[in-house]
Amino acid sequence: MTTAASRFAPSASPPSVHCRPVATPAELSVHLRIRERVFVDEQAIFTGTDRDERDADPATIHVLGFCDGEIAGTVRLYALDEEGVWLGDRLAVLPAYRARHVAAPLVRFAVRSAGDHGGRLMRAHVQVANVRFFQRLGWIALGGPADYLGSPHQDMVIELGV
Ligand SMILES: CC(C)(COP(=O)(O)OP(=O)(O)OC[C@H]1O[C@@H](n2cnc3c(N)ncnc32)[C@H](O)[C@@H]1OP(=O)(O)O)[C@@H](O)C(=O)NCCC(=O)NCCS
Image 1: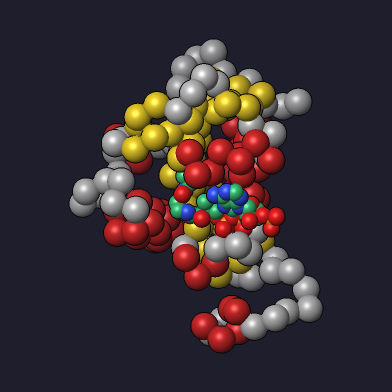
Image 2: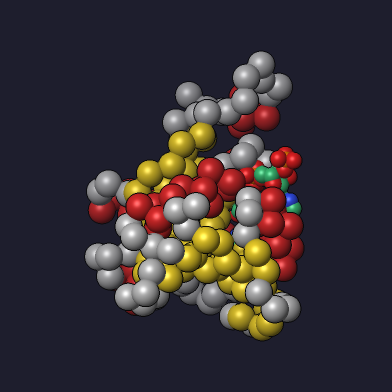
């Protein structure tokens, strides 16, 4: 069992992190609750809910990140067009699991999944505070920051399947 104490206790080995798409309606609910907790309650980027029409689209891929077997984070991805351009969004890690290298595997998983589905390019609107993090994962900034959902975001892009 993971307790608050064990989560922060020094550990001999790094946490084991893995990612996969939600497998059941119950897991989709957990994915959506994590997003709400981070983007509505914590960051107040959305009011009430961050759900949109993409969540009702069966083609959208909702992903969960697990840290030492516990659900710790989310990312969502979907095709924007028929030309192989995908968008990744809703990258969120629960506060208790931050700085434990859950986000990077989630981003890499999204990139790999989009490539596996025939995508050639993935885009993301990245909060400016996270630009460096994405750059370290190979993403490139397009232009300068612009307002998105009421706060400054940077358009970023990565080639898929390279
Ligand atoms: C941003 C967020 C997803 C990062 O999650 P995380 O699991 O703590 O990140 P990781 O542990 O995988 O970070 C990996 C590395 O990137 C670094 N990093 C993480 N966030 C960073 C940031 N904003 N700026 C620079 N570096 C960052 C970490 O320090 C770590 O560095 P290291 O390899 O040298 O130790 C998380 O803080 C979060 O959910 N924030 C609120 C929602 C949000 O901002 N979502 C992203 C929208 S674009």
